Length: 171
Image (cartoon, rainbow, N blue to C red):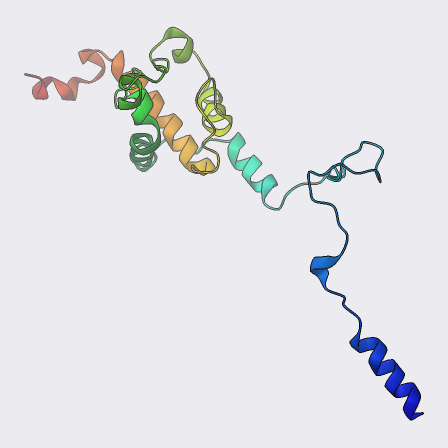
């Protein structure tokens, strides 16, 4: 009995089951195991990341316009959008003045007629040379920025008759 226990102990002591020394594929490595030659496996059909359904629902319906939403939109716009688009939305931000491509003005007829989802999608996915802000700006703030962009658009074409309370403030 004693020699068998000693033999078992010696065999177990010699085992190295280190996880770091196992044969494995790196994610982007080629593989002979799969027909497509890739070690990375595609996700099964109908897989949804945790929280995606809630984000998708929030992305489809903009919140109702309110002074608080516009204030938040202005704050977020000033941080993320104004460096390129300018504080007035005409496309003359500091980044554009330093030699980068000028973004389109928000008062172009094409953008004046664009539905709100166009701006939301541009913030989410990027557009042209503008990269995506999806990882920096949450969906609710994207809608706030869109509401503020609409306010900027309206302010560029507003007449004194549309804002009579401004009459006393003009020089």
